[in-house]
Length: 208
Image (cartoon, rainbow, N blue to C red; front, side, top):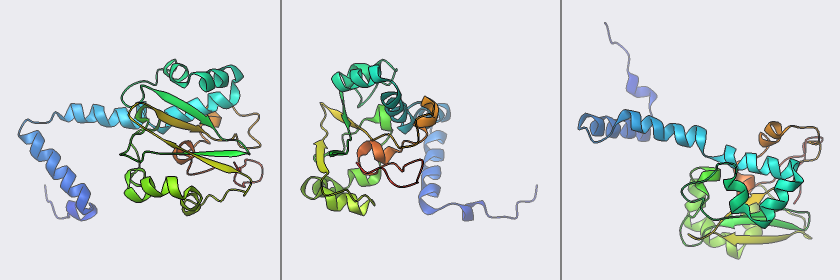
């Protein structure tokens, strides 16, 4: 069959390098393609921000679950099957109109993988790790979040022993939504504390 077009031209350098490395390791028998597929499926479909969003939606809609989450987040979250690496010990912190919560790991990049998937690059960067503690409002502003002066900011430092999940404030206008619909409103960054969710009725951000 004629082969008169350039497949490589559609790939960026990094993607091409990763694909070449994967092929090399596969050809040498060092990697099983099926195993790679299972890993990708795991991070795309079984763990990641959708798990955290489900927890948040339940906290918004079920007072009993919210109370359990507040008292013992590890047990409440594990009851949903969201367990595994970097999700062994968890604390949920709740945003209110008086306090906004924000999570960082100043030492490395401790992060609740079982709830939020793999951490974003900026979460692991030195500027975020150092500045989130010393000037959280300035960092939040760079994420597009400007809090009222009367709202305090509490920064939680994740460690190997404890990871944190921010429960953002429920958007106004979401009273009649199902748990699934509510989960669709929740973003990864809102569960780290670097974003706030827009109000359903007006489209304005829900100020913490």
